[in-house]
Structures are given as C-alpha cells and as structure tokens.
Image: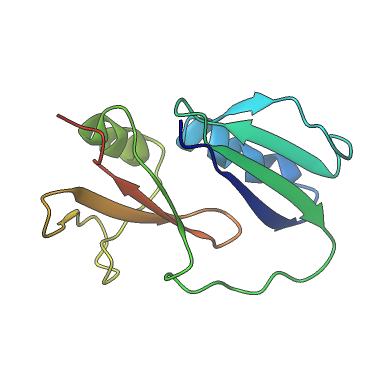
Length: 130
C-alpha cells in the first residue's frame, strides 16, 4: 500500500504529552515502536491506514507553517469524526477559516481543517467514504 511517514518537529515543553495525545485522542493514531532516540525525544504514531507521524521533540523555536504545507487524513466515518471533534471542543474551519463550516470540493469530497497544538494544519477529508 501507499506508506508515507511524516516527520514533525515539536517544541519540547512540560506538557509534551498534550502534543501526542492530540494525535491519539483526537485523530485516532496509536503509538508504535520508536526505532530511534528515546520516548523523551521521539514519538511515533500510526493511523488505521498505516500512515505514520514521527514527532521529534526539540528546544528550538518552531516556525509557523502556512496552510499550503499540511497533512491530510480521512477518518473511517467523516460525520462521526465531526461529532468527535465537537465533543472534544476541537474547533474546525473550512479553507477560508470559517469556523464550524465543512466545505465540499469540486469532486464531491467533504473536507475540514484543524490545527494541532503546535500549529500544524491538518486537512480531514471524506476520501474513503462511500
């Protein structure tokens, strides 16, 4: 299958667990074995599609990334995922930053945008829905 790893630099803070818990509790990623560093420097997670995120903790200032540089994921059930975001008080927008608005692309795919605690943009879409 299509297997990609995404490496994100995450600024080290005392609340380091907030960073990876967003990917676990909100996006549904699971911890997987980290093959480099330690649990204090690196954290690897994967979703149900096998897509991996490698969190690399750093003391350096992280530059804000523009929305054009983003990752995209498709949940098992798009509408259920929206309910999950709302229950967890995670606000989402359309591409034009209208809060709570889901947009529909020209190809009929629904999408929304969230930011992780570090500020990275994440597109959530309905690509794998019937």
